[in-house]
Length: 160
Image (cartoon, rainbow, N blue to C red; front, side, top):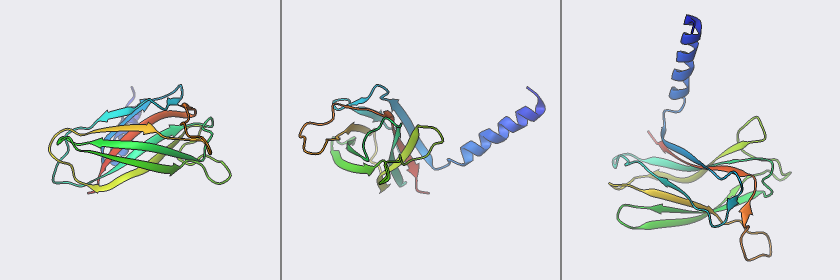
């Protein structure tokens, strides 16, 4: 590798790390063949500093096959003391004309969706479980396989 390429690579690596200095945890799981309604995406979180505050996000990667304007999810946050907090959340995934929201230059869009802010963690290991709860209008049973979602992620950022 030439000296110029080495310097360019080093600069790119430093730039990418410094741009994401708030990231504490950021993982994804693939659901590439459609996100089945009984499929739960789980993340074991690292032990967090109990003296700091954090913001948490769901990251959804989807493509043009996603047929809805919104996304309903059920998020369970399991704490070390055995307590579980469960939230049902709706996110907008497309504008009124049906164009997918999110970041990306190709047909894959990534949406960083707010979950909780200014959170402190208790000592011990926490886990997060996410499943979709999308229903079609007038139908009781959920959408069996949510097409167009390719990956589900969870992100924690430091507020400092």
